[in-house]
Length: 387
Image (tube, rainbow, N blue to C red; front, side, top):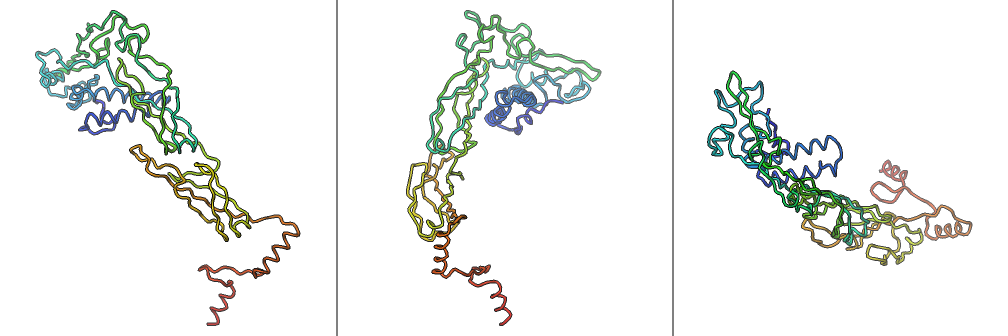
């Protein structure tokens, strides 16, 4: 059976060329050997790349839409049967009729371009919460394919140039005819000599071996905007892999790995922290110093502050980063109050607390009702039976 190129890229048969390109780039970012070294992922990457090369070529895509396979698999399946009916009428003849080739010799579908777009690349960087709040401009080292500076992408040694392939005559493909008692099947496949390019390089560049690109380590500046969060990606256009034949470079995606902070926990653009205060401070109230991302501030604690009280400091959180890359305001800082009850008291402290309990009438205790009203459990039961 012919290969399902649309299914390989996960697009519909009526997908536009831009949708096909986006689907390929998405899969390439996940499966590229620089990102995913797994052997199964590399095999899948080769399938995805082959599908993109076919569907991005309008002429080869028409072959697929007619039920054929431009990479050489016969259409229609089983047993060498001619899928287009009988006597001497094969796939090559159908394509000649569509593309206007004269004679029965194969058709002018054209070779594959040597210049291909490059793949995207992915790099992860670690950032502190403070860096996520302010944004950073960081120098990072990346290793990608870059343009060969010796041949400038041509792949040819100095003073030489590509020549027409003798095997396919510049068409980029070769045809074969299989005869059976039902007729003949004409199939086309990429030329094994020029790999479908229609030309060969007799004198390859000594630096890139005819690829037009070489791998190199370079340093670039990545500008990360304020408000980024863990897992977010910043796209650096044109900083990815240079394509074969010196083709346009893909993009470089910088993924943020946010480090855990010792004090603050993040929830979107808001920050949360816990402030532990003594029982006496919660009862009397105080103005306490508090370190924030903007520096030290004063936090006013009202007298009689209860445990689990939450105080909100507006605008003391992180910048809100919109999908457009712009910052729209800041989040809030949520301070959760935790009251510490002393566990060890000396004799004098115990005496003072007992005196305070007497002064406040707190020697006896009752269980609070479920609806918050005063009175113990047994008093409520008595009142229920004496009505």
